[in-house]
Length: 171
Image (cartoon, rainbow, N blue to C red; front, side, top):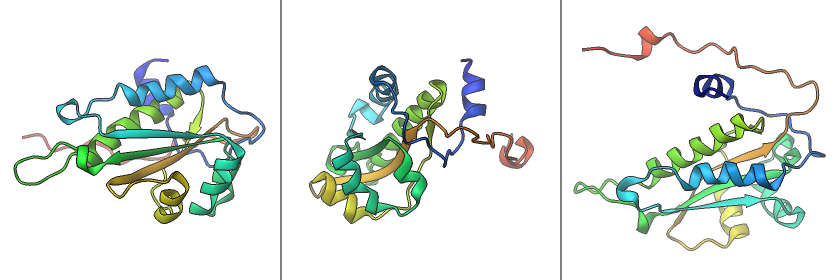
C-alpha cells in the first residue's frame, strides 16, 4: 500500500471479530515496525508486549472495561524503562517520545496489513503493571487492541480533520 494510503486509512477501530486471530507472520511484521523505530541516541528503551493467550488476556482485560477491547484477539502493550531513556541536559527524558514513535509505526504497520487498532491511554495502570509484573522503572505508555474488524464494520476514515491552514504556521 502506498504510504499516503496507509496514513489516510489509519483509524481507531472499536469493533473487532474475536473469532479471527491474526496470523503470526503478520503479527511479526507489525512488531518489527516497532523494533526498527528510531529512538533518541538509539537507546531503544522499550519492550513491546503482544498478548494473545486467553490466560493473559483475562488478566489484562480489567484494565479497560469496554467490550470492544475484550473482543480483540490480541492486545499490544507498549512499555519502556525510564532509566534507559536518553536525557537532555535540562532533564527532559525522551522515553515517551521514543515510545510514541514506535507505537505509531506499529499502528501504521497494522493498517498496512488490514489489521484494526485503536490507541488507548485511558486504562488502569496498576492492573497492567500487576499482570505484566513490571519493575518500578518501567512505564506503560499505551495499549492497542489488534484484530480484524467485524463484518459490517463501517469505516470512518472520512472523519474531518482541521484544514492545513489551521494547523501549520509558515514563517
